Length: 146
Image 1 (cartoon, rainbow, N blue to C red):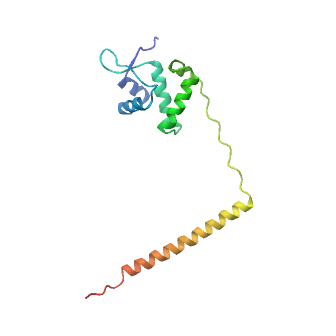
Image 2 (image 1 turned 90 degrees about the horizontal axis):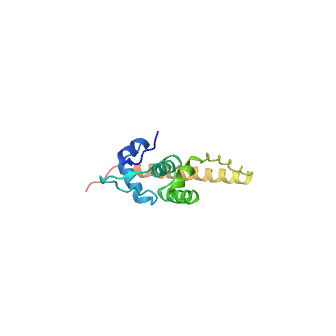
Image 3 (image 1 turned 30 degrees about the vertical axis):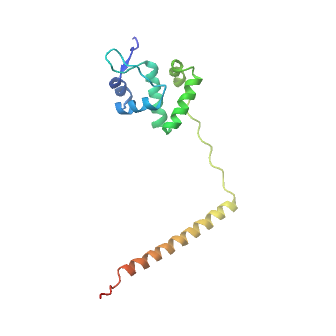
């Protein structure tokens, strides 16, 4: 089956489960995503642009990047993959991210300091609650009338 020569914005959005306004916004934020208008005046997206949109969506929605972070990552990936035409190959070869190493264990001194801080915070909270009760009692007390 031959690949499509261009996707209209509605078709691309249906394929990738996006709203058209989201895609239009991404076009303003990601220079690599600049679909030219066809003869009818509608934007026509290529296969390469489809892959770029798919990658942007993955960066933002699945990997939790901000727009700025996604821009930097996408630019780096496109540069490493040889530009827009190498993007589809680059994205297909991605490997899953490695698991983060476990946090370092705390030594006994650090654990004791954390416990002391926790106890001090508990005391401060108890004092704040007592003050709050006092203020409420004063506010609800009898009013003096002239």
